[in-house]
Length: 375
Image 1: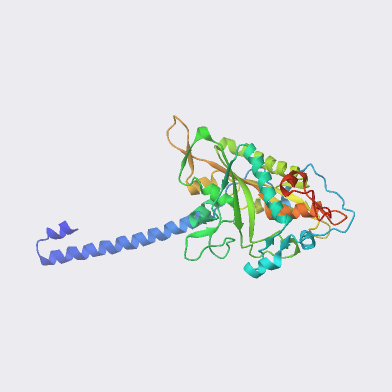
Image 2: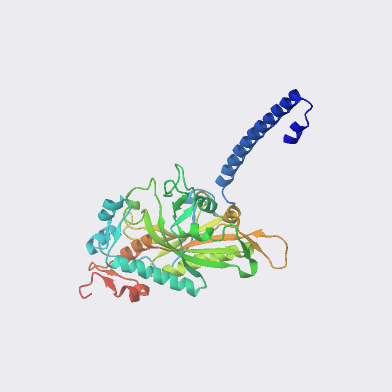
């Protein structure tokens, strides 16, 4: 425009061309503002769109989910008055809910005595099993940027969030290591020959659990902080369904090894969540839950196909071929410590008031049972 002004024949034409330049700049700014608005609106719509759904997933709400199978350990009749984990923890001085509430509010707690040893034992038990299966063990950050949470499928901020966000920072406390493990290769291109990549990560998990209440949610079942060991895989598209079944089988192997009764659920469409193409939930039997015992969710395994990879731009390249393609991602809970503790304490309670420790954990806990007079 400056060259155009310089070629003006006289002052009047020069001013006219200046006015035209100002008008064009204003029009450009207006158009850019409108373009930014449309891009933000389109992005919000895109981020809110769920994944496609596997054709075999049952259609409907939570009540329409199908039971696929049960574990090797059968539900046993206790034959004595059953206590829930809160009562057992108080009796054996295992969990301090009141202390946790004093220092951080309801939903936080102190683990004590054998409960601490059980948490550490569960971590060792799960990690040794997964490393033996070829997973790369990792300890992940407990915070992640908002763009990573959005890519994985979480809502980091706003009225519907279940995420704790750090004020004046683009950082959030993670609700699961799925967020950090899934974001690890954001913007990266993987080598197809090295896939699938199997990772297992230990992290603390922080969740607001807004709206959670009632006896079924009391104690450790819905808390604001817990430790979890997460499985995650990056696969080729043709590998993801087999990997999903493999994750589910590993979760079953973990709970069979703990002698905890459970059932596997094929989650219905209305309860899938946005990223999951298909999700298997493992629900452990909790004798102290409800009036006479109930199943409670302890793990889930999800095949997210290319949903997360598209949002995080995670691709793979086949050697000798042009171009790249989106990877598939899968996640699965190996151990969510708080809920597994519920199942161990309630299933392990004995007529004499002691709590039997699963045999697989005894070498780390250092005893067979909690509350025995000789221990």
